[in-house]
Length: 384
Image (cartoon, rainbow, N blue to C red):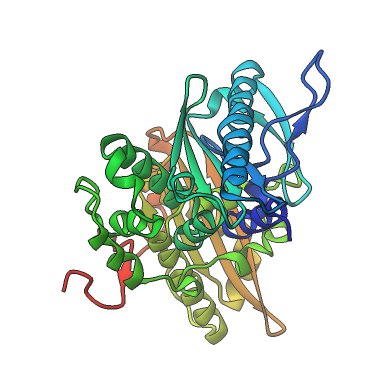
C-alpha cells in the first residue's frame, strides 16, 4: 500500500469518513485544476492539511539527504504554502469526502489550521534529517514534520479530532520553547509528556513511561458501529447529508466524553430489551456546548416517539441553556434495535412560553450532576 492510500485509509477510519478528504482537486476561476492538499481532515472550524511524500528508490545517505531537502523542505513546504494561499483566496471550495459526498468548505469559518508533512523515507536517511520535527515558513507558518511511522503512532494514540488538535497545539508550543531539547527526543516522549498532563514542564526522556503505560482501549468509546446506521435513522432530515450534523457533534468529543455517550447508549438498549419504563439519560459537554439525551421507549410509547424525541431534545437544550442538542431514542422491533435521532442547532433565548409548556408536564429527567471525567488512563502508575 502506498503512503497516500495508507494515510487516507487511516484518517478516514479514525476521524470518520464524513470528515476525511483525499481527492482534493478543485478548479478556481479562471485557473485550471489545482490541488488543495494531499489529505485533509475538516470538521467545522478545524482543518488539518497533510502533504505526503514517499521515497520510492533506495540511495546512499547523501542521496537520501538530498531527496529530503528537495522533496520535503522545498517541494512539500511549497505545496503547504499553496494550500494556505488557496484557503485565503477562495471563500468556497468544494470537496468530496470518503463517503462520496460533496461539501463546500467555507474558508471564512476556519479558525484552526494544522499543517503537517508526512514522509516515508529510504532506510539510509541520516539521523539529523529524521530528527527534524518542524519547518517554519514565511507564508504558512509552523509546519509539523512526521515520518510515516511517527504519524501513524500519533493517530493510533489519540484517535479523535479534538485530541489530535490539542496534541499538535502542544507539540508546536513545546518545540517553540525547547527546540534543541525536543530535536533529539523520539515522538513517544512528546506523546508521553502530553498524556501525563505536565504540559509546562521541560521535555525529558522520563515522560516516555506515560506513553508506554497509556491504556488505549478503543472499544470502550468507539462509535463506528453506531454511526453506520445514522443516514437511515435521523429524523427531521432536510437533505440526505443532514445526519452529518449529528456525527459532527460526536466527532467533537474526546474519548472520555465518547465513553459517557456510549455507556448511556447501551444502558438504553438494555432497558428497551426488558421493556422497562425508564426516565431518559442525558449529559452535557460544556467544552463543545452540546447536550445529549437518550430515551428508552417501551412498546406503549412508540406511537408518540416522534413528538417525544423533539420535545425532550428541546427541553434539555433549553434547561441547560445550550446552543445545540442531540437526542436519540431506542425501540425494539422483532428482536432488532432501532433508533431515531434529532439534532437542534440554534441560539438559546429565554422563552416564558416554553417554560409554561414544560411546566404542564411531569419533569422527565434525572437530577443533573457535575463530574470531571479523566481523559487518559494508565495501566500502572507511571510516577512510581
